[in-house]
Structures are given as structure tokens and as C-alpha cells.
Amino acid sequence: MDIFLTYEHAKVGKSAIIHADCVEWLAALPENTLHAIVTDPPYGVKEYDIDQLEKRANGNGGIWRIPPSFDGHTRSPLPRFTALNAKERDRLRQFFVEWGRLVCHALRPGAHVFIATNAFIAQLLYDALVDGGLEFRGEIIRLVRTLRGGDRPKNAEEEFPGVSSMPRGCYEPWGLLRKPMGDLKVSDCLRKYQTGGLRRYPDGPFEDLIPSERTPQRERDIADHPSLKPQSLLRRLVYAALPLGEGVVADPFMGSGSTIAACEAVGIQSIGVERHREYFELAQRAIPRLRDLETNVDELVGAGARLF
Image (cartoon, rainbow, N blue to C red):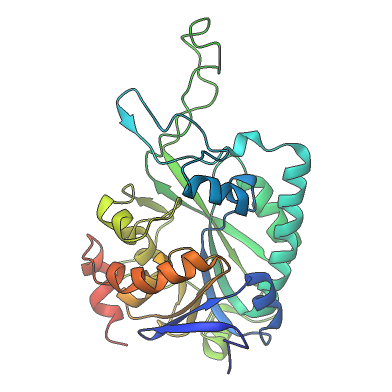
């Protein structure tokens, strides 16, 4: 089956990456192709528009939350999801309704979607994906102090010193959704499509609460991307995404390739899609280096996966 279609692509280990718009790519795939999706979308918010990315790259700001450091803490630039107006939220919702429809077309019945989000727009995202045809199966909670929120009212910090506009963020939600199985049972789906469930760890089931770290600096030094997730988290997710340890995991919003690197690290075949050339080229360099890093979850997910 040709999953590259006519797009520029590159092989990385047993996986591959494609330079393409994922909407076009998903629409062109044959039905029932993919076994799972693990992804962290940019959400199409204005912080990720091309002109804003160029401003950030050139050191000219862009609409990121400023300043990136205060109270002795240094932070990466943070997307201002709280600044979305009604029109932008509607645009966001419509995009993910359509994206959900395309995902339902491309996934096998029973295949799961792991999708990163944040507490502020999670409800909007899940509602849109369900309208697109996916089943909501729950949330995976990544326990991590994101340092978002907890700030005093803007331009009134001295007047209201005892007030926070929002709670300090201590977790990151990942939506867990599934393509409907129709009349099939999970066991039927496993036999026919290799999908329908989640892979257990050697010592027990996959859990929806994952203590996590902030992305280590050594990983950021390899892959300079504003929303880079740590390998210690991604290796857990991609391992669980294929219940039988076989099939193809896709990341339609590949960025610098961290999900693909995680798949490579645990012996899973994967395919990443990225429309920005600078990230597509970065991923070719970063994936092998991220793959080869040791993490604190390798004993849990690494040895067993590499048997396949």
C-alpha cells in the first residue's frame, strides 16, 4: 500500500516522514489504512500562523505571551489560548470536525487517537472530534507543572495581589478517542484489524494518569520546537496505541519528529506528516538522535517492543 502518494518523503529506520499538508494526505489515503494516531496539533491558532512563526524565528516577537521569564523561572514562549475570540474558536472547532471525519476515513475500525490539548480548549476539541465521527473514550492526564496560569490580573497586579486569573497548570490532558467498531466486539476487531484495545505493559495495564517531566533540555537541544513533548511520555503512548504491537502509528502534525522518534525507540512502525519544510528537514536530523536517547521508561516499554 502506497502511503506516500506523490509527496516528498524520507525513510528513517523502519518509519517514514512526509512533507505534506495532513488534511490533503488523510483525504487521499485508502480507507482503513492506519492503526493509530498519536499527535499534538498546533490547533491553527494565530500563534502558529506562518507570519507569527517567522517573527519568532527572526527574534521579532510574534504574539506569544511575554515575558518568557519572571519570578526567577525561565519559560518557553506560551501560546495565548485564552486570547481566542468567538470567531477563532469557531474556526478551530470547524477545522477539527473536518479533521475528525478525515481521521475516521483513514483509521481502521477500533483504532485509537491520542491527541494533546489543554484544559482551556479540551471541551471544544472533544466535541468537534465526536461530531467528526470519533468516539470519546476518556482522557489521559499527564501530570506536569506547565507553569501556565496562576498569574495576577493583567495590569492590576498591585491592586489585586491576592487574586489569580486562572489556576496554575499542573497537568496536560490528552484526549483518547476511537473510531467506531460498528457491530464488532473488541476481540473481533483485534483479529480482523489489529485494533480495538490498548496494549498492556508487561507488569500491568496502561493507565490514564502518567506522572511526567518537563521536556529535558537535552531533547530541546536536538529538536527546537515550541511544543516538544518528552520521549519518556511519548514512548509510553505509542507503546499503548498498538494493542498487538503491530501496525502503523501516524502523527499528522509531526513537528520536529518526536513521536516518530518514540516509535523508533520502541520498535514500532510509524509515519509522520509535516507541512512546514523547516520542521520536515529538522525531523530528518532529530529523529535518530532522539531515538537513541535513554529515558526512565525504556525498561518498561523498550525491551519488549524491540522483540517485534
